[in-house]
Length: 173
Length: 177
Image (cartoon, each protein chain N blue to C red):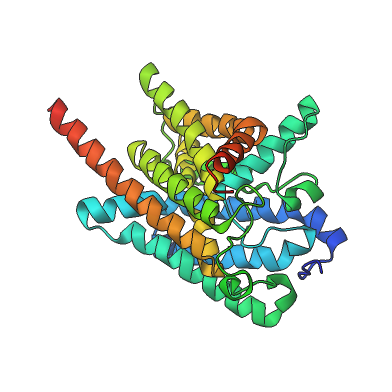
């Protein structure tokens, strides 16, 4: 059964660019005002015991949970697998390479997470912060965002397939 | 007239106080991401996909490359079905630019040629590893809120990466000076 939200499929496919553009405008504005940054939150907490940004990231998780919970009571069909763990166990929400084993997903989450945290802290921010700093006129962040675009194509065209082959070769997928 | 102007400015500065606090911004992003899902999920999955800087950038870039070069790079179902795909990151770029201009915080900041190489490589590898993990830190947050245990492991790994990064950065700073 396909998930059903407030908009029917015909309307939703047209609304996607509009709704997400407005969401982005709002988040861009708020992100510029607040300096919102997830990796920066962890960094500031461990380096200076500053909790300002960290609380922002925790609030995001709590806000998402509240939003999912309330809206899933209103429209259960839009949140078929909330609370995910009860429906799908340890299998992650789709997004990473498809049809691997749970162990492989956990390995990918650990490797990916460490690399993301490391790169983020050395180059001064998570991807949202880099996009916002690009809009504030930071050329280094602009280069980072261009790198992200190249990385996206490289990942989809070659690296995802190579990674899955590698996981299969070591018996994880 | 002057009084109403002062009043409306006061209102803006009150809103701005909220906007400057990451706590409220985080809450807002989380709730809005859930709202986007309830509005748009009929267009296609995956779930907990309301806001993601890595995946939404991938969708926009891959769809653009597909349109220009005639390739068939995969994107999320929602971006496959909708034309054009999710525009979140374009929105963030514009929104932050307008805000930076409005509050006169726009400054062109250049770096050295070497720093550009590092940032380019950083961006490439950041994206690749984020996509292996299945999202940027924000989508990981949404997934945790959705009840995904692997996302929680991912965020713990991000914290480990941050700690390693701080170690490297401080030892580099000590060596230099």
